[in-house]
Image (cartoon, rainbow, N blue to C red; front, side, top):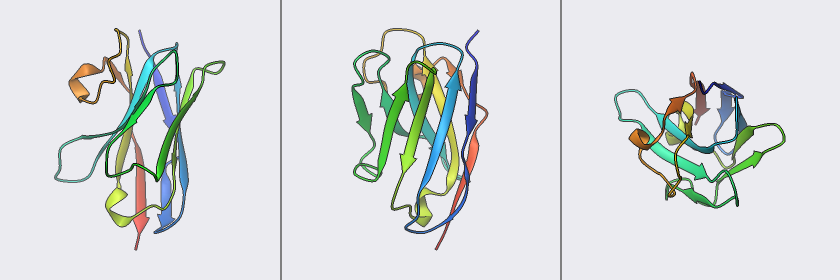
Length: 121
C-alpha cells in the first residue's frame, strides 16, 4: 500500500517562497496537484521515478520546481514568486504504473492528505 505524507504548507506573502515535501513509502513517479475552493483539482507538476523528466502546468512554469531525493523517497515542490492565485490545498500523488508524463489526476493511484498554501496579497 502506497503511503504519502506531505508537509511544508503555510501562509506566505505574495512574492515569497515555500517548499512542500512529500515522503513516499517507495519510489514512484510523482505529481503535485492543487485545489482551490470551488474549483476542480488541477495539475501542477510531475516527475518521473527514473531519469528526472518533469513537466509543469503553464501557470507555474518558471516559478515552481519539482525535484526528488530517491535516497529518501521524497519529492519536493519549490514554489517561488508566489501569487494570490496559487492559494489552494496542494496534494502529492503517486503513480505506481508506467509513467507517461501523467498530468491527469485519474492517472495517479495514491494521494497525500493535502497541505494548505495561502498567499496573501
